Length: 350
Image 1 (tube, rainbow, N blue to C red):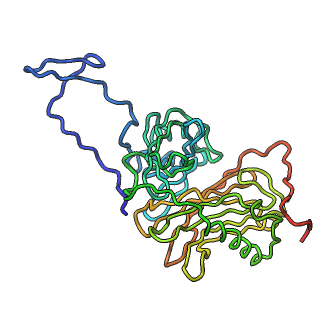
Image 2: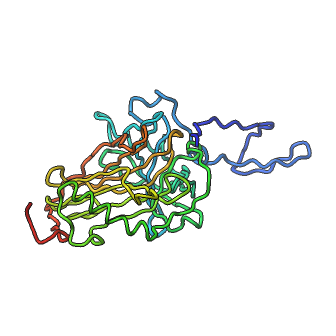
Image 3: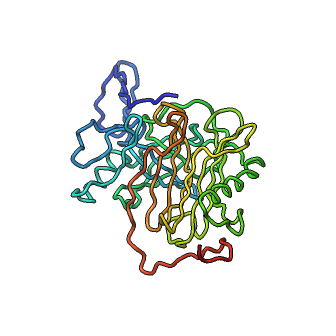
């Protein structure tokens, strides 16, 4: 797979006619020419600012990776994740000293203006598009978000989360979307791997493994063969921004299948909240967004007052975290409450 860089769109113009109205029919030497108003800015191909033209505001000057979440009513929310810079990612956030209003206005104009079109990806394949229709609130990092309409191929109609790029700046991928299934082998191994990680880290088993499981996905990181899987298990916590039991924990992993050993982890994160504070990871999706190697995975992590993103990539045969975004906190809630560790065994202390 290779990345398609931003390209100039060259349009042949054999005839130029000055339009006096929004749409006129002009007779020109026996031929009828229809003159129409140009499409609004942002439609179709992306116009990326030249490097340095908006440096004072710290705006992205290259390709931006987006996270799209589709709502039940067909609308969708789109959030900028990071700017792709070669093989790495650069965090997007409002620089200190820049007025929020000025940053928001210029960011929307340059990156995600109304009528801008985005290409949607799921499980490494192009599956649809989204068109921005309205502005949405800024994140805690001061980065604007937007809402719009998303449409996908029939095979991805049930999918809720996507990775996205502005039309004209998306990576070139091959193959059609074929959603991998969470079948029996994945279901049998999911809790076995989680239990192994819990014991290796000196944590208590939950009362119920199905009750602790918050997310289970089948992946196709490597085409052909048995699907990979990712899973999130939580004790004393929910998969979202909010309070958690100080004695809770999270277990996240990605595992691949081997004929002799079954499923084995290729990437893990285990957090004991008593030592690290809350951090509940969940896989968003995977895609070869920089055109090199075997692709990358985007993970969203939920804290008590913030959420942030991480990127995981394969380096020298091992999957490791290669980038972590800024952790910008929302204002503290007036009366935070703690969620009891209902899934924990009868013991309340360790």
